[in-house]
Image (cartoon, rainbow, N blue to C red; front, side, top):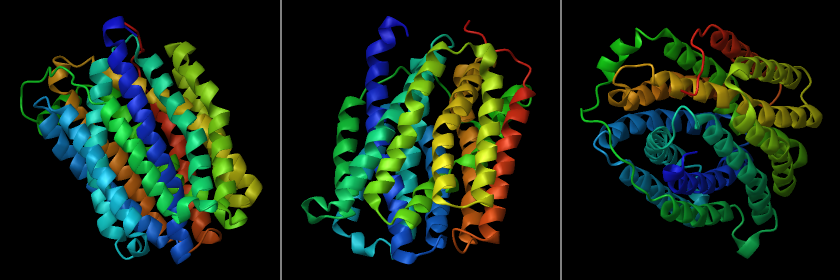
Amino acid sequence: MSNPLRPKIIRILISQALYHFALGIFNIFFSIFLWDQTKGLKIIGLFGLFFILTHAVSFHLSAKIIKKGNAHIIRALGLVGRIFLFLILFFNKELIVDWIIPIAIFNGMLTGMFWMSANAFRFDLTNKTNRGKYQGTSKALQIAVGILAPIVGGSAIYFNFLGFGYGNIFLIGSILLLAALFIGYIKIPNNETRPLHVYKTLKVLKKFPDIKKVMVSKLVGNIGYKGAMEKLVPVFIFVVLQNEFQVGNWMSIFSLAAVIITFSFGKYMPYHYYKQSILIASSVLFISVLFLAGIPSLLTYIIYGLVRQVCIPLIQIPTNVYFDNLIHEIPDYEEHKTEIFVIREWSSIALSRTVGFTILIFVPNLSGLYMQIFLGIMAIGIIIEPLVMWSIKTKLTKT
């Protein structure tokens, strides 16, 4: 990474790691909390559905402001808002089930603000040369905090620190987000001059089929392993063990298995091996989902948890680098990059997770035919992703 950018990059990486720490605790144990309160998957699906739709709208609206050079303000507002949300939940956790849709909407709005600004920071602080290293470091840090977050959250709940029970996840999250706010509060130069013009960028993208292919690959891949599947992993394990502390330990073991592989991949793997990485990782993940559907047990839950933690970064690092570097192929790409992030958010993230959460609403329990159909759809998405990526003709370069 180039020296002039290094201090800002390090601050953003640390800040995002703290953000992932807070969200890691929340995402794991909030799903378990909802399951424990209702003994059903419908509420998890409803929360996810309203969250992702609001997230996409917020992402789009935030882009209009960021085009004017205010990414740091949007980022700060997203963090401050989430701190207040966590504090509200801390003092009113007995009302969470009744308020689940408003909570999902507010949560989605704040997350969309943060991630739109995060995309702007990542793209503007990196370049074609150091993007693989940045992605690898970012994913490694994300997984590293994923080792600590489940242990911290599970211990706080199970041992009932300070008598707060599940309230601990909101209190700890607020403290972590406050640290992320101050460490990551930096400004980046604004290289865009025109208002948001999504429709115009859509017409430009027609001339660049490889960018559209990456979006399609991320769409089907995210159906397979993000969104609904992320919410289900801790619930699968909790239903068997009935112990938040042990769930936290297993989730931490999953992350520990992946951190060294992820960092090394991003730093040392040559670009010309990226497609092979996507194919191999997707194939292994596909097989683990089939075992999950065919033989639901603690063993297959653990195997799947380990496999997804190792394989998903080996898919996402290459696809993210492909996506960001292909943007440079567009003339005047600085005038289109924010619009491309918005288009990707709707097509590859919002749509994919809407599919997963909508299906989950109609799955009555964690086993049986409906769950097998759900997992079968997820598996199809996983195996289509590498096929789409292999059809990309552009070769990645660092120049």
